[in-house]
Image (tube, rainbow, N blue to C red; front, side, top):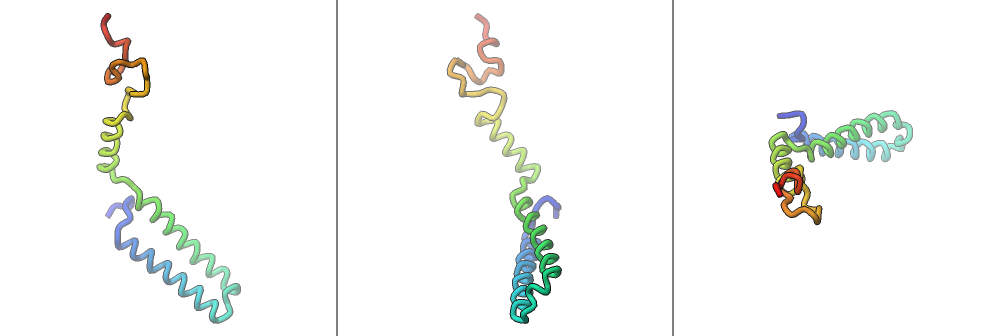
Length: 103
């Protein structure tokens, strides 16, 4: 599996990590040691935060194929070299506009 894609197995591990963090916080709270365990909680929170960041970034990552398809579609709907926004442009599909036409 590519490092750039956040797969279902890794997502399941993230859910387990978050549940373990919640369980540990509840356990420390019941024992009255919540604030005494601040360094441990900080470490657990850091691990969870890091993994959540990777999930957020990589779950929205476009694979190279998807990125290329998106680029092609964007070019086709106006993200290319010409613009349909110029009201003086009679033939916007020509890359140089009016300058390309022969009089």
